[in-house]
Length: 67
Image (tube, rainbow, N blue to C red):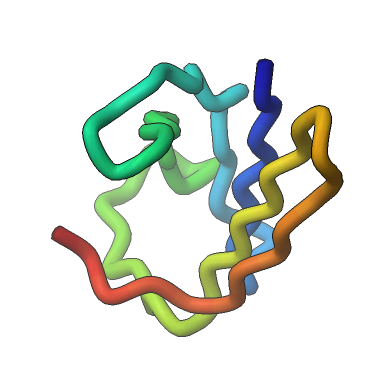
């Protein structure tokens, strides 16, 4: 099974451990993000980094478009 790591370019944004599940497109990784101060955040999607590690190797994706 796959494991995902989600990071942001902002060191003050906390990211929970992603929950990875199968989906029609492959896999879905869901995580909670919050500012360490508890304040609302405006997330720069270009600063999001997703690394997926599975039996066949790893894939590193920088930036996302949302969905």
